Length: 462
Ligand SMILES: Cc1cc2nc3c(=O)[nH]c(=O)nc-3n(C[C@H](O)[C@H](O)[C@H](O)COP(=O)(O)OP(=O)(O)OC[C@H]3O[C@@H](n4cnc5c(N)ncnc54)[C@H](O)[C@@H]3O)c2cc1C
Image (cartoon, rainbow, N blue to C red; front, top):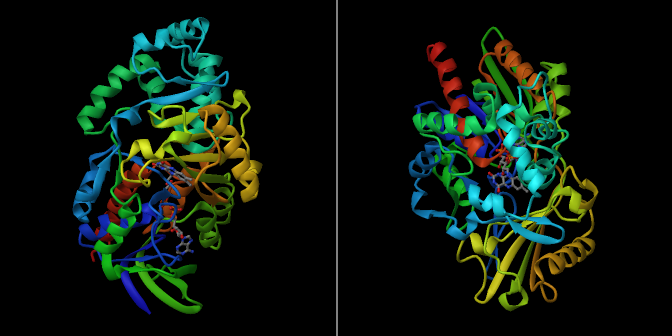
């Protein structure tokens, strides 16, 4: 039996960052990861001159904690920011790509929305507050009107959560948007007041934050943290069961390494695994919470990376990419123009795109076989981007359970988690199903979790 003051289960970005912040505070930590490599959804593949991200293609530097983490673990030199062209984003309407306007002047000239839709926004400051928990669709339609929901928010929710605005809770999934109404009485007024507060906290709004990756792709981040943690990390180690000795105030983790069993003891355990795994591990402790967490929906998403010769693509790939509103009735959610965002990711004379399929909108499409997926992608891209012929390179990544959906009622589940943490001192539930799904949110949450664990351990007079 081994032991450490704290133990983190799961070696995705949430678990790794938590383990790092704990160690930085001088606390002994062990991290258990069931796979042979760390990173969870964050993995990069290099093949024949192409750099393929199988999970997140980039992340936003929304907090100074990101930079601190990169400097701490020695990967700050590898950091790259997206090319300025990446600020341009497109939305499909009527079969054509429309740039998302980035200034009030461009907004009024844009053909993405009708004049009526634009004038509807003028009512926004006079709309009252919500009287019940609302979905994103209800919130946006009430404040900004139907057209803005259909041709701005619907595609963005698909782009961020691969989700449906009708099901997601605005308060849980977009807490900062919700807070603008709660605190300032509206989105436009809140934009002004919120900017002042972010400045005070040293945070940056998501629409202003710089988009980053690393020279060799996103996997540099988990690999860098793992290298800095060294022997504290145990890969190919699956945690199967946990026991709590209330008298000794110790948790015993039962795990298996390549089929061989082992045990580990700890005063504090931080779960940084997907919801369904956490549900299984905590079910002997709290069956109600376990069922609630297990019910968090993760729709499937398939990423299809396609490479072309530059002269095959007649549309200028001068942006981050494009998103597709549901009303357009297409079979893909959108695409990132990967080779425009970061240099050095394709062979000479080539371009690359990453296409997203499935999500809550069309989960069954994500489950199509490879031939059908490529046919779908070819047809949609040839049509939307005026591409000539088939891709010269393809790579398909399937996520059967991709991104947790913060449905209506999600915050009640978070409250149950908080009560559980009170009943089992030293246990903390982390991961992307709790407090934000983006890489940046996971880093911020990990910092909070590590400080809560450190405070708990200090209270135990180690
Ligand atoms: C397709 C896709 C695209 C995305 N794009 C972006 C993007 O562009 N930008 C962005 O900011 N975010 C993006 N995200 C979201 C972001 O990548 C994730 O929310 C984040 O990486 C999740 O990290 P995590 O550590 O919480 O979970 P995970 O990465 O899921 O890590 C959990 C870890 O726990 C391990 N584990 C599970 N069970 C056990 C067990 N019993 N014992 C030990 N270990 C176990 C798993 O193997 C895994 O390594 C994307 C997500 C997906 C799926």
